[in-house]
Image (cartoon, one colour):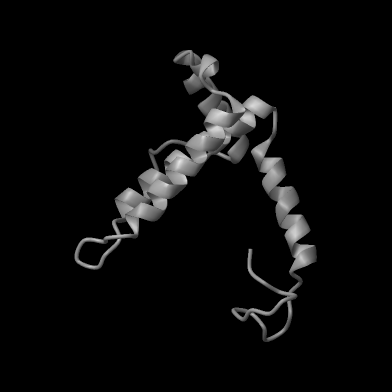
Length: 116
């Protein structure tokens, strides 16, 4: 109520593209630089869990770092002309074939049904 409308991945991808274009970042966004940025931000996401204050991981810090990873990933998809939404759906479909549902095996690991 009253908040921004819900967005799908494609709409977010377009919003990130516009944000980057408005700042003229096309000259510095290369495949390599964006892959490095995704990796660096993923490390920062992991770092949030390293030394939690009072034994509690900061949800705000997790959200911030998750958003950074997502923004760089969307930027990389834009640069490569990839629909991240389509790529994720295709990967989920491939994973459903690789990891079929096994009755009473949810939450367990074996060589044939390892988690993604």
